[in-house]
Length: 262
Image (cartoon, rainbow, N blue to C red; front, side, top):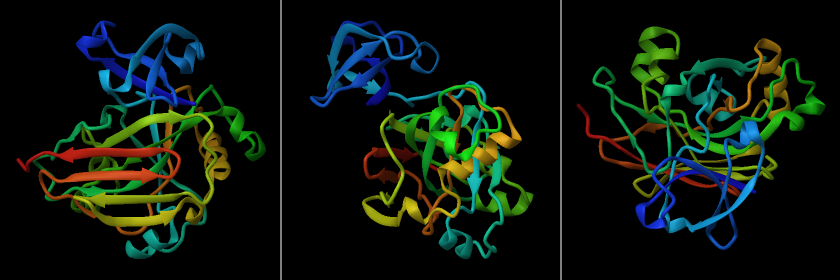
């Protein structure tokens, strides 16, 4: 099931407030009531064509985005780092989130900004100290993320919060797939149509059960929290006014444009 968050276009006759819905196989959206992460999936009789909706980030974390660093061996190698012995975690503010087709805004203090394609886990319930074998019980579904990064500021600061924490630095979308099972699916990034990252999810050093278990042993996770699971090799800068597209088999494509450099 694909859960979307969207703003209806005026011709849909459903008002202008953001809504949640289920994207059906015929490319129609069935409107659901409330926030599915808190009220569950309750379908209404209202429907609209996908072409009459503007997709938004499928989840706006009320609490946090937890990110996993250096979770692909080839990426650790390109960064000149040893393989981590346990997951490396950091936090991105929820104010970094934007949706499909939104613009990544280039901060004035950032000399360059990089793309990083990542699988994103959406947490569906309050949980702490989740056993690996119970991880699926707390996951609502999966989407995609671009962990946008200012590499120069990351090196300058010696830690990652500023470099990865600017507004618009976490595109999410285009929807949450509740039946996705991570395995050997291909994950790619294209920049202006040219492939830059190309890997499979099974290349992750720490898989989803290990990640959720580890993170939940550190902090309580809440409904709508997002965990982004690391990026493969091939990271690089996005020129101004470029178009970056992240794809994962079974999850669709997340496309964003980059603003002009200030």
